[in-house]
Length: 400
Ligand SMILES: Cc1ncc(COP(=O)(O)O)c(C=O)c1O
Image 1: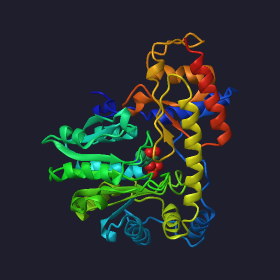
Image 2: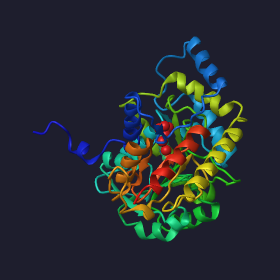
Image 3: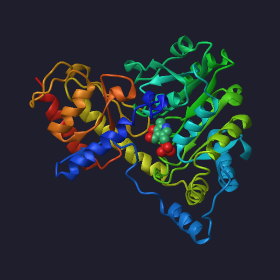
């Protein structure tokens, strides 16, 4: 009898975590490495949020909580959905988990049966297909189009849906491309979904507050209210409030689904950290005035990186609407050889040679299901980005 499960064989470890670890190891060995792999803001958690957590500790709010969140946080989330998204949820329709990742995990675990299909636009956040596979489901990938900044079209969604489709998974602004869907683009997709009443919609709105140039963020149940009864609207405090380590994500959805997700959570982590929940109450109810200036900093960095990368022959980098990622294509560099003798056969070879020969850590596109590209996270200092772009330019122009 095999010791490890068949399920384990279906999934792979997170490649973004692997790149971050490798860059850290090289740095520890004394190598000069600029890490552009990590998917988290370089800003600190705001002081009012930290103070709320410290107050929670002093007040003894350090015990188990209700499995899917304290009522104060659920109410704060309901208020957020009403205020920012025009969505009306009651606390019984809210689930709070240990990060957005656990929300997605719970939802898929609670709903997927072997053979159920989940339509996922690529390039996708690395964890989507693997969480689906952990839930015994089958990811069905549709490829974003380079000329659309790697967005997918409504026709592609229509073509991907089969009688086995259980979920359509949507993410805007996107990790890894930063692409954000306009209301009209999203409406075209929700129109298709309206023709398929058995397909549920999972929308991952994690990067809602990181949008630039006046981009209007919208979410499926807002654009098509008739989808409300079969939509799980997922969000969290990790990216917007620079709280990745606090591990709080949440979702609003139909009561039966939320109840099923609670059952999964009650048999795994029991509840998200009590102290982090009180911090998240403050994040959502407290002042929001630092969000816009922080987004302005990200926009400036996006512009810097896109400008520098697009000046490099062989690289084409769409200018995305949000998040803190860009997803340049290296189609123009394939088949070349690096000064160190590495053949750039694909984006994995490119990223490896770039790290080893130029000291810049990026994540190769194949990890996100669409090649030949790489992802840069520009959530780091302007100086580091300037230097990284210089190194990338030198490396690319040195390819022969
Ligand atoms: C698109 C997307 N969804 C969800 C998550 C998970 O967020 P959390 O840290 O809250 O689990 C991430 C984190 O990188 C992400 O990029």
